[in-house]
Image 1 (cartoon, rainbow, N blue to C red):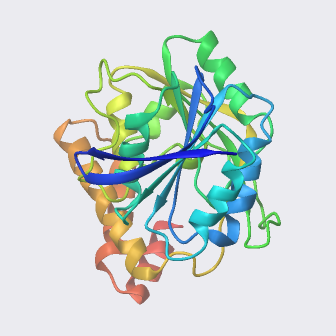
Image 2: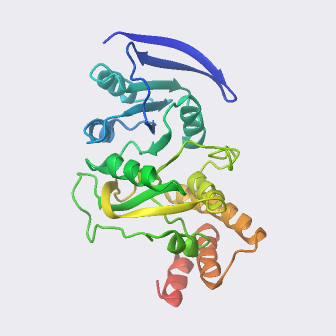
Length: 291
């Protein structure tokens, strides 16, 4: 398949767009994925999107400065599908990559997926149908499985999330009730001003959902529609602490908006323990907290 390459520029600088001639037009959904050195699982993740029962989508893959074979893998898939548009850029992190991808997207809905996760065949179709039938809902997530490095179900695999809007809003000030990799939301900024905040390197989704809840209803489909890959050592101790620091920034905004309860303070202390207590003290805290 013949491709076109062009250089573009936005608030973060210059980047290259690699687009096939005959790129799919008038897509209802823009699937957005960012990859950084993800060659090990990228092909399976792309396969899971291209194999969806719903086919009216464009697929924007951001190569975020990978030093492995990730870009070449994406290019090989682009030869097979005119749905794939590739953004090639220097490493900037997930938040800025998503902002950039959504900035050039054309779908009425944005669907997220991480480069090591897998969407089950009917995921896009069921989330699209729900949002089409429920105009007062902005966001649809789902239940999901946990798989290991080899793709096998990991222990007690199914993660059940709060389903109804009232349930989601009752817990969102304590923890993130959505799997970022398996959400679909409206490509509509009329009440939000912006989607992801570039000041949040991590917890960018959590920060966004706390703003969405002020204006819209949210929902998690009560069925497993994705597989989230986890394995020992996938996230370093330092990165876990950094992620929690960004989550604490979100919770600071929650406190300023005076929407706290007892559960909020429990999860706040949990985050603080991860960031500031040595490992041995965190174990004592978990025992005292019954977790």
